Length: 293
Image (cartoon, rainbow, N blue to C red; front, side):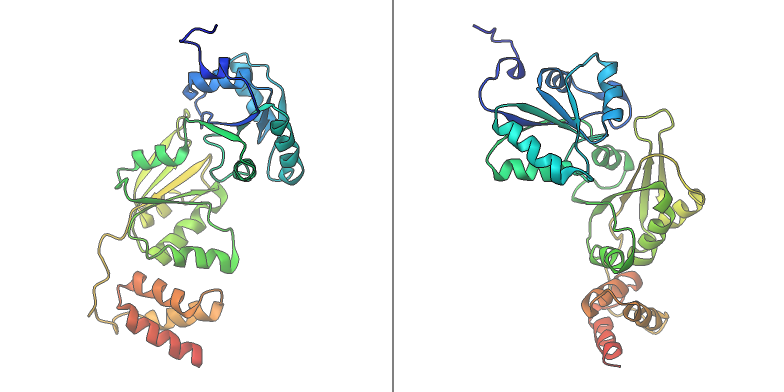
């Protein structure tokens, strides 16, 4: 009979399960004891990048079998993993860094397992978005996690317009090569808000820049290196009616936004009214006129 102090992963028997295991976002010492125990006990580890995960396993002398599960093979490998779980295997799901299911293909496998009423358990641990939010010095609640912005086109413009009206702290992920363009898009769509740019969290070269979006553009004038998390403060001042609507060139900007396409009249009006602090009704009326013309 097992000791009452034995862990669940050591004594659990029965049907298979998907175990969603959080791994370090940089510093390999940040893994939990339960995560290590789980990775040692499972039948298989499904990893976003097996080469990356093998470094972690080698550090802790873990020899569980590895299979790849990433965005390019999820359609084929996902059903295979589901069949193995249905056959009674315990599969651990890990991503390159942090918690699976957040901005990575693990979300699809979790969704499939839940839809089939399979056992899904989360072994919690590090996640970059929470670490960056706490370190930012910005209000931690309410906040919204937006993931990676779309890389280009109308979808990208709509992304920034849709979230311009959210009066809360916003957290995004971004790649180093798109950082400048994203900072410019934030400034243009959301205004010159307070921002924290967290780079290489928990690693030797960790950096957390705190300032305004314009200051961040100056700081990261060249391509940044490493993993990036952006924490953007909400609007400091609510839109006030009765501001001088003739004091800006907002009408020309509105025409340009509508001319480029991709945004509805409503979305374009929301974007311009928030950016320039104008009554939404005024801007919406102007947008309708522009669209008619």
